[in-house]
Image (cartoon, rainbow, N blue to C red; front, side, top):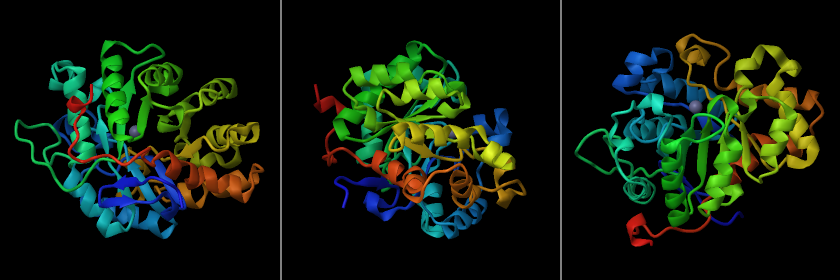
Length: 333
Ligand SMILES: [Zn+2]
């Protein structure tokens, strides 16, 4: 039995409950900005998501991390219903995404680190706002966030990035919740880890998304040396390449070099063209059914593959300590 718990939208659970974990998913992305500016990732329909996730469930997927944080298209009541109906447990995110999902005038760019951290902590410990922090009215649901998402824009975090990272760190230190980051184009991971470490977050609590967008082994080795968790999510888009998939090869190389406990996988399947339920290919279940076969062909053994496919992510999503629901960031100096 692993100590600690994983906080899903339907309640707390144990890392031992899951064999296959998708560590960077997009189940619902629905906001006016997304519909207008990014229609190819506008995922709004509950029925489609239930169909897609049910197929994943039948393929062994037990848990998914939904990577849309505050005010970026997160719809918490829909997410909870999709989880209940599909049987796939879902960890929802608080935090803030890349600037392109908000624009320069967004409220989140005009408030303090403490104010942001307080909102993140409330999502984590009390319940995610039904209106996604997009309305002056806040109505907390029973569905709490289980991870803090934060994004940077390049190798060197700018002022917005730093402020959001600091707020994420504050919320993580207060609650024990893990952090998942967005590395734009695969960049920025090491700077993120250095900053978060400086604010008290351990490497094992940091999941770095999209690092395999730069599938260069020396780059990935440098990141792995920080002790943080590398989330590789490009293999679905390389589905037709089989053993020639750069991501599959990078995963293999990292495991072989001794970083086998730090690699997790996801689909980052936000594009509608990847969902079978929407007429796309190969479908989100591909990762659970096909990637293990490719990794086997590349030489990994059963225990190495099971760590990459689920064990590592379940551990990384486990909170460090039990939070006290009434506490807020402001009560902690
Ligand atoms: Zn994503």
